[in-house]
Amino acid sequence: MEPRWLSDEEMTAWVRLVAVVELLPGVLDGQLRRDAGLTHFDYLVLAMLSEAPRRTLRMTELATRTNATLPRLSHVVRRLEERGLVERAPCPADGRATNARLTDSGWATVRATAPGHVATVREHVLDALTPEQVGQLSAIAEALLTRLDPDRRLYVRQLADDPGTCRDR
Amino acid sequence: MEPRWLSDEEMTAWVRLVAVVELLPGVLDGQLRRDAGLTHFDYLVLAMLSEAPRRTLRMTELATRTNATLPRLSHVVRRLEERGLVERAPCPADGRATNARLTDSGWATVRATAPGHVATVREHVLDALTPEQVGQLSAIAEALLTRLDPDRRLYVRQLADDPGTCRDR
DNA sequence: TCCGTTTCGTTGTCTCTACAACCATGACCC
DNA sequence: GGGTCATGGTTGTAGAGACAACGAAACGGA
Image: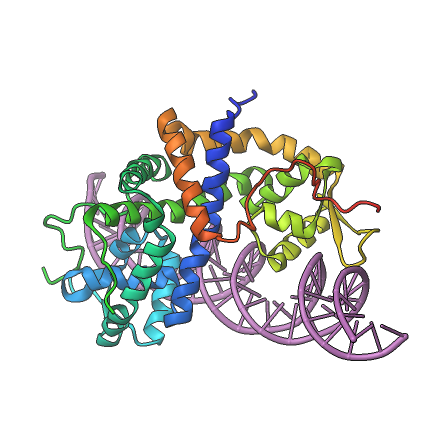
């Protein structure tokens, strides 16, 4: 059962996409590590918390918003907690759940780090594209995510009424 | 020095791109690991060798074509050699250089693995896009690579007369 | 109430990657 | 020839992710 092979156009697009996927994390990690001792994933965790009400999210919700598995997030949050950037506390309403909260120190770190990070994103990604291409990229990435994450469990969604935090009943 | 912030369109595109970059490697690694015990990067190394004349490339050239650093490649090739998929031999023409060569076993592995890998690429990436979007993706990725790898040292290029292999003088 | 199942999260182990240090060879130049 | 520098590659080690196993709390019937 031979599969449908790739056309030249498809092969070119695929090779380039693979190269981007291989190189982009290194660029992001490099800048953040030099400037703040953070992984890009660390930054993502802190950023998601910083945007949440009370700077607090449940681990599961945080994993969803950072496209991560729970074990991975657990390790990362433990390390961030050891550095004083995040706190963990059991959820009063659900004994199984844990709330992660951004500390003042973590908040300060995010604020100090964001400008450099945004500059890097501009320099290496957005400013390389025309406004039209930014729109195309958005649509393409959205289409890919429907295949990469069919259940739509991951990546950001509307937050209308669910704060994602575990509070008192 | 506040940086230029991101517009809504830019932010959306960026968030989605980050999600793709986060999820795609897992999908590729997962299928290849289950079916062949290979990392996607392992597969890339084997595939590049399989397309080279005499199934042989110098380590530096192989690193270029796989978008990898030399230390990383060195570790990977050592492990592939331990599994009998690749051989290393000093280059007769340049005492510093090492030629990596795909063994018959490695060749068989590539041939056996390629169909499943291509099917995965189709299913999770290319078939999610219209032909027009494939072209857009190609152009966008090309534009990004000029920023991510300004020296153009990495990723595939024309192979006109340079075989990339170190042979006898 | 009791038992089975699901959900939530942590931990241990193994593999892989990044980074820096290192060694050997070749190239250049006086 | 003998410095000096550049190039090609390997190795050691420390850190981060994948995966599986585990435990604890909630839920859902019988």
